[in-house]
Amino acid sequence: MFKKLDRQVISWALYDWGNSAFAVVMLTAFFPPFFKQFLSADLDATTSTFWLGIANASASMIIVLLAPIMGAIADASCSKKRFLISFAILGIVTTFMLVFADKGEWQFGLLLYVMATVGFMGANVFYDSLIVIVAPEDKLDVISGLGYALGYLGGGLLLAVDVAMFLMPEKFGFDNATQAIQASFISVAIWWALFSLPLIFFVKERKANKNQPAGQAVVMGFRQLRDTLREIKKLKVVMLFLLAYWLYIDGVDTIIRMAVDYGLSIGFDTGNLITAILITQFVGFPAAIAFGLLGQRIGAKKGILIAIAVYIMVTVWAFWMDNVYEFYGLAIVVGLVQGGVQSLSRSFYARIIPSSKSGEFFGFYNMLGKFAAVLGPLIMGVVSLLTKDPRLSILSVVVLFVAGAVLLWFVDEEKGQRMAQELN
Figure 1 (cartoon, rainbow, N blue to C red):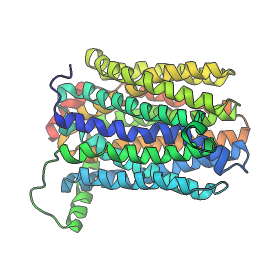
Figure 2 (figure 1 turned 135 degrees about the vertical axis):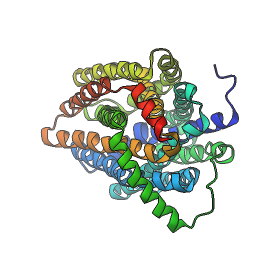
Figure 3 (figure 1 turned 180 degrees about the vertical axis):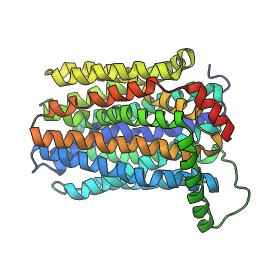
C-alpha cells in the first residue's frame, strides 16, 4: 500500500510525528495536571478548570481570527511553508520557556501555554493545506491517515519516555515528579523541532510567478479572501460540511484537551490518567491507518459517522464512570476513533475544495475547527463553575456530536467534487 510513497509524503507525515508530541504531552497529558496541581495550586479545582478552559478558548480564538487571512496570503504568495515554520518556531520556543514558570505563577504559565498553543495550531493550518501538494487525489484518505498514524506513534513514543520520568523521577535524576514534567516540556520542544526538518528541506511548494513585496502579497491575500468568501457562499456542499465539522470536532477537541482535567476533578490519580492517555496513543497508531483504509473502502463520510457514534457512547459513559479502570477503557475506545475522525475529515474536505486555493480553504477549515475548541472548553469550564459538577459539563458535549452527525448526513461528496473542479 505504501511502497510508492515518495520522500515528500514521508517528510510531510514526519511533521505530524514531531508536532503531535505537543498535542499529547502538553495539551492532553502533562500541562493540565501541571497547571492544576503546581501553577494554580492555590485555586480550587473548579476555578482552575475554568481558567484552563479560558486559556484553550483564547488560543483557539486567536487562530479563528488569523487563519483565513493567513491562508489567503499564503496562497497568494506561495508561502505555506514559511508560515508553517514561523508558527512552529513560536510554539517550540514558548513550550521550552514553560520550564521557567514557577509554583503559583499560573497567569505567566497560562500566557506561555496560550502562545505555544497558537504556534501549534497556526502551523497546522499550513501543514494541513500542504496535503494537496504531496498526495494524489486517490490516496488522500490513506496518506492523511498515515500522517495521523505517525503522529500517534511519534507522540506516543515521547510520551512513554516522559511518563517513565514522571512515575520514576529519581531514576532519571529528578527530585520530584514536577521536575520531570518540566523536563517533558523541554523534550517536546526538541522533538518538535527535530522532526520539522524533513518537511522544511524536502517538501517542495511551487514558487510564485514573480517576487512580490510583502505589502502586495497582503493586499492580494485580502482580495483572494474576499473572492473565496464569495465562492464558499456558492459552494453549498463545502458550507454544510464546514458547519457539521465545526460541531462534531468541537466534541473531539474538547475531550482531547479536558479529559485529564475531568479525571482529576472526579478524583482519579494523575499517574493513572496519564498512563491511560499513553494507551490512547499506541491504540491510535494502527487505528488511524485502519480508518484511512476504511475510508478508501466505504467512503470517508461513512467512516466519520461511525467515529461520531462511538464518541457519543464514550461521552455518555464518561458521565457515569466512577472507577479509574473505566477511564482506561474509554482511553482504548477513543484511541480507536480519534485519529480516524480527524484524518477522514481532512481528506474528505480536501476532495471538495479547489486544490489551487487549498491554503485559504484550509484556513477556513482550521478556523471553524478552532472556533469549536473555543466553545467546548469554555462550556465545560462554565458548567463546572456554575454547577460544581464536572459530570454535567462532560455530558453537554453529546449535543455537539449529534448535531454534527445529522448535518454531515446531508453532505453530497460527489456534488462537492464537481463544483470544486469547476473552480480550479
